[in-house]
Image (tube, rainbow, N blue to C red; front, side, top):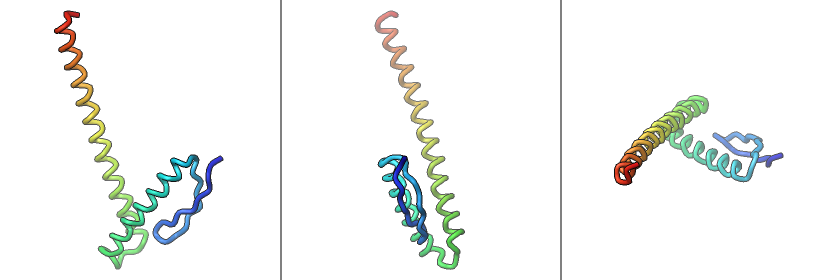
Length: 96
């Protein structure tokens, strides 16, 4: 099942299948973001070919993804530490 969609990325049409309406929405948002980044790289590097610019987009987005994963991991560790502190505090207050 799924919805057939066509996305234009860097001036080229791609026929894809979105498994859910939510996935279609994410795919469309992603293609818009890619095209915005490509436009910026077109201005910044007019002499570079599309393949090079797409590599820049991929690198930029992957770096952002890794940075966000690190932030989530750090926040998760902090939440676990706070939970432990709260548990210890409550244990001390209740004597359990």
